[in-house]
Structure formats: structure tokens, C-alpha cells
Image 1: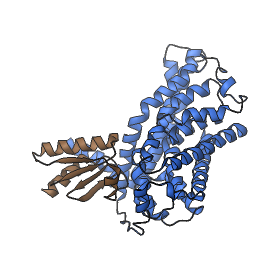
Image 2 (image 1 turned 135 degrees about the vertical axis):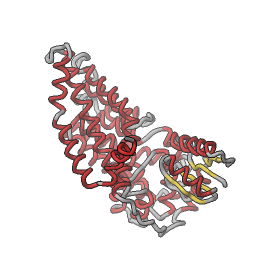
Image 3 (image 1 turned 180 degrees about the vertical axis):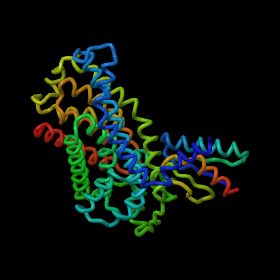
Image 4 (image 1 turned 90 degrees about the horizontal axis):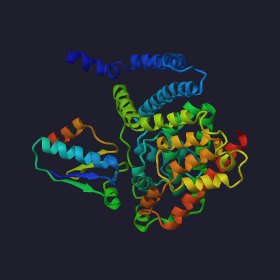
Length: 79
Length: 351
């Protein structure tokens, strides 16, 4: 599984990154969480509001910090 | 016990109609109770109500709950409105609109569409990709940060509904006119090349139907209140405390000579020139606004300052530089700043 967080470096993007890393660690997974900060790369995913979350090439979330339960459900589904 | 608290927490979502009725009643009851509340608090304190300190405290204990109550109400309603207008929907509505009608729609949608200044660039490109004209996109980009719920709630709470309505109307006008001007100038060639290549590349994107229940919308309203009010309340209390503090202590005409009604003509452009590079949100600028007004500055000059702080900022220009060439950024800043200066003069003239 491959997780990417799209965001130009605002506070919400950092918070999203941290939440996902915590959830990954809590579930004992060994997944690389990547940050995509370049605006051209972000636009390639067709996301209009940041932070966005991409799992295995699919956009699962855009705009605002996702809830903990949401993150847990993505991780469970992608396992 | 636990099951009960979970059920209590969930009931607004499971009985939305009942919740709205109750919430509206409670809100109005609280609002009506503000004046007796502040009088009661001050009478309980060891000061006389007509002393300097007493009137400052009365002002503080009346204004703080009033502004916070208004803010919670407006932000909650906006949180629910946001569940109806996503950026994707707004984009679909604006796609292919002509200048004029498109600008009016874009500026109005800018008020109700969820927007964070850190998403300004992705939003900008997303709009252009879907075939929203450049001038229309700019109307959105000006109105979204400037005419926001926090600014309106604060103006309403502290200066009354007329000032709030005037701010709303004039903010919309600046956004519409600035967008039309930029559209008329046909500045597409001053977009960065990779952005130009993306223009109109995704016309007619499907927008998924929104199937959220009222329960989920209410939850979103609460989340919005938590997020916004949780962030801005210290600024508001600080601002009102400052306002209460100068209530009677600092000479009223301290600022009058350079920012008052009879100040020289250059006071409005000067306020805007100082405000443009500054970067803070509506809540952060309110303490400054309170202080300036309390010391005799004219409302139009202060509002022009406030608009320029919120609508334009140096960090935003730097982010926009990734998608716009310098000439277009300069035009954007110039047109918006000129609009704000005009608004300042109008405010000073009619009030």
C-alpha cells in the first residue's frame, strides 16, 4: 500500500500527515506515507482543496483534516 | 451511563427537526438575556456601574457573549451551508459562464463555498481547468477570503447590522468589479505556461450527487463551529478587552487627526497600503480595528484597512506566483486595492 498526502505545506496538511502516520503506527503497519508538496504534482490528481489523501493512486479525501475513524477505515480497506 | 451519554450526543443527528427548533429557541433566549446578564455580573462585582471601570466592565461583559453568540450561530449555519456547496459544485456552476453574470455568481458563491487560503492555488487551477473564465475565477478568489462569516459576525456584533450589510455589499462589489476588469484586460497570456496548457482541459466534469442526511449536515455544523470558533475566540476576547480598556482611558481623538473623518484625502490609500502586505485572518485584525475605532479613526478608513489585510497578503502573492506571471499578480493586487480604497471613501462619505 502507498499513501500520499497532498498539500502545499499549510497547518492542516501537516496535521493530516501526522494523524495518518499515527494511525499507521498504531495498527503496526509498515507503510510509507509520502508528502506531495509540488503544486503541479498535486494538480495531477485533480484535487481542488487541500489537504488531499491518495491511497494506491486513488484520491480518497480532499479538503480539511480527515477524522480518525475515516483514516482507520481507509487503512482497514486497503489491507 | 456511557450508553446514555452516547445517545445524548447523537440526538441532534437523529432528530434534526426537533434539534433545530430547540436550538433556535435557546439561541434567542440567550440573546435576549445578554443585557440583564451583564448588568447582574457587574452589580455583583465590587465596582459602581457608572464609574469608568464599571462602564468598561459592563461593555466587556455585554459585548463578549454577544459577539461569541453571534459567531457560533453564523458559523454553525455556514457549516451546514458548506455541506450543500462544495468547491466542485461551485466549479460546475461557473463553468463556461460569461463575464458579468459569471462574476456576480462567482462573488456570491465565494461567500458560501468552503475556502481556506492555503487551497487558493489548487482551486484557481481547478476552476480554469473546468472552463471557468479567468475574470470569473478572480471574482471568486477576491470574495472568498474577504467576505467571510467571521468578519460579518464580528461587524454585526460590534457595529450593528447596517455596517455588516454595507461591508457585505461593498465587498461583493469589489470582487465583481475586480473580476470584470481583469477579464476585460484579457490577461490569459500572463498565466504560467503549464497552467495555460491546463485551461479548459476538463470541461463538463460530472459532479456526484450529494446524499448526505440532515444528521450528517448538523454534525458538520458542529465541526465547523469547533474548528473556527475554537481558533478565533482568544482574538475576539482580546479585542473586546482592548476596546473596553480604551473605553474612557485613551483620549477619543487620538487617531482623529490622521485617520478621522476630517483627515486628509490620503488617509484611506495610506491605510490600504499598510494593510496589503500584512497577513492575518479576520479575527486577528479585529483587535486592531477596535483600537483604531476607539481612538477616533473613521469607520471607512478602518474597514478599508481591514479588507486589505484580509483580501491581499504578501504570502498569498508568493503562492500565486507559482501560477501567475508578475504582471498579472500586480494587476490583481492593483485592481483589488483600488476597489478597496473606493469602498473606504464611500463608507466615510455615507456614515
